[in-house]
Image (cartoon, rainbow, N blue to C red; front, side):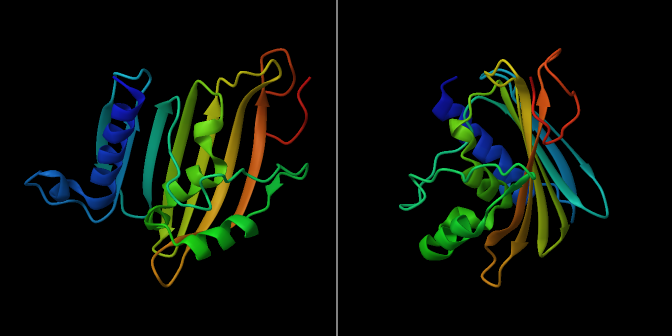
Length: 196
């Protein structure tokens, strides 16, 4: 399956998760709050499961290879800001661009996270994304890129806190990062400590 076909399949699956089963041709009624998981370990393998929960909404996606393509004019050449030694990443410039461009995808917290991080430009074996909506106005997106093409760092985890705006789009409140070292190259927990 081509990368473009994988992206279309992923977008369709994520749309089904976000909009509920009824919007994807199912006759069953969607649960008010759902937890779903989509995993792709190879370009031709996609599996999904769904279950119900009552306190938070969590969508989890693991995708091998590239994940998004920017369509917003000024965000097409966006490069994520540097990761600060204290574990923070500046979000103001990205939020300003979202406010100026007003892309339609800004209504999806997962897409906002991937566009901010430009995960399509990270050379990793897999990208694992977990979205948790603790309330209608707040979401937490955790993106973990695993199997980095780096001799010291194995994985980087990004923790992004988002807030829904009055126009139903999302903006970043804060962003942070931590990393896990390759075996025998330092710590195996996610911290901001350097790997050797």
